[in-house]
View: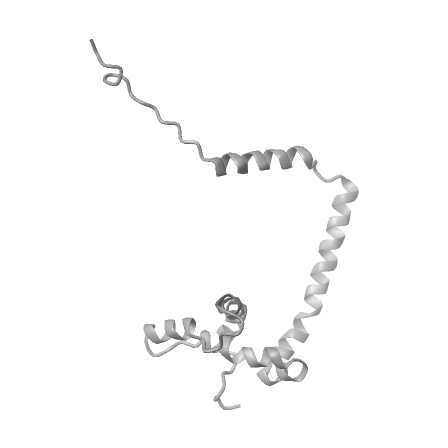
Length: 139
């Protein structure tokens, strides 16, 4: 006589509660929220256009204000005090070790690493354009 374990393959059902919850949430959301009607679509498009125009209107002033680091000190001292530390995080070193050290050891710990990390990410496109100066560079 064969044992009950011997010839049968055991199937294991893995239940992942996080996936089930996510699927249930998506299904619940889809049931509660119907597609937009014509008025809602029109309103959404108008708001999207207004938002794009508003965003575009502030591109030129923001580029002008960011051209010179000293411009930050005109209206707000706080941003000017933190700016050089965020730029230093993005400054490449002579070696990979020095570059990583610049990014991880930023020498200004009042706001914490997440604050400076996201500030450095926001400044990264400008740093790539070569428009930013760090302290000690010639004007």
